[in-house]
Structures are given as structure tokens and as C-alpha cells.
Image 1 (cartoon, rainbow, N blue to C red):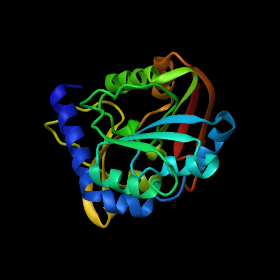
Image 2: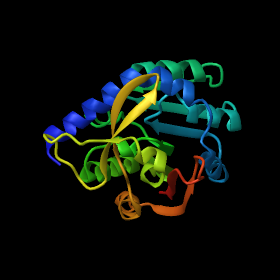
Image 3: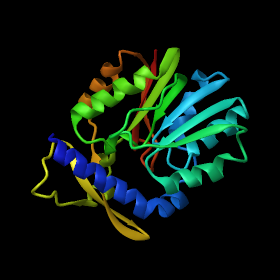
Length: 233
């Protein structure tokens, strides 16, 4: 995928979240069901990097299970969502860090963690090569013995999401699995989403060089809306 298309798709998603952040926050307050499967692997103290943290609800999930034994660092590109994350975390964690950062355009901050997660994010990264590089960058943040956990949104497996696909612009390049989806809550908006199939999911795991200890599907009405991988360094 060419650099112009990557830039245009990233700009589209940045604008999408600027428009929809309040509605995203209102409808995304509960923990993902699939997160429960992580708990047996985690031992406090937990130093976690949450990439694409949104309103911080994974941090809330950890705080509710492990109390104050959490050092949380959330990264997101949207200022409004980070504001909501601050509101959600301030009563639960004595110390946390929130960083506004466009991970497609900028490098990660320095630091190592025993847990690195990326939920609801990979489908927004344009180009297969960028997604593979992103997984390598995530792996670099994990200490030996730590865990890297990611989930891929299986939106093409659900008819209601397939109905939201809109026409692809002729001036933009496109890779297999690339789509534009409309948004139907509060305001109208369009987002770029990539469908990660089983073959690409396996390639993303392989790119880390880590051991996959579990792969499973969970979430949504079909209990298969996201496909997770739990990887250990």
C-alpha cells in the first residue's frame, strides 16, 4: 500500500474518533468478556501498556481485579477519549500515565512492561506490512516472561457489520480485507477497517517471535466477535 493511501486512511480514522468519541464512550463502559480469559496468566504487580486504550476500560478491568497493584500506561490518538480514560481511572488507580500519540505516525515511548495489550486497534492500521511491523514493535516492549495480548475484530463474520460497508474511493489503493464502514450512533461518520483473517492472524503472531499460549474467540452476541491471541515472551 502506498504512503498516500496510508496517510489518507489514518486521517479518516483520526477524524472518525474526533467525531464519535462521546458516543464511543457512552456505549463502551463494560469490559470485554474475552478479557476474563487473561486473568489466570496475570500476577501482580502488573506493569501494563495499553495501546489504543480509548476510554481506559481495560485499565478499569485490571483495577477491579487487582486493586492498586497496577501500573497502567494508556496510549491513544484521541484527546477526548483520553479525557474519559482519566475520569474512569482516577478513582481506581493511585498512579497511571496517559499519552496522546498517533502510533501509525510516531514511535512508542520508551519503557518495558510485563503486559502489553492491543484491543480494537489492529483493524485500523493500514497495510499488511505496517500491521506486521506494529506487532514487532509491541513485542519489543515486553520483558522476558511477560505477555503480549491482542485481539482482531471479526466484523465480516457478522451480517449487521457487513451491511455497514460503503463504497471504496477510487483514488485510494486497497489491499484484500480493506473496507470502509459507516457509523450509526449520534452522528454520521466513516472509518477504515481491515478484516484480519486466520492466515493473517497467524502471520501477526509469528512476527512477534513469541510463543502463543492460547488463541480463542469471544465477545459480541455470537461470542466470536474478536479473535484473541495470548503470547508469552
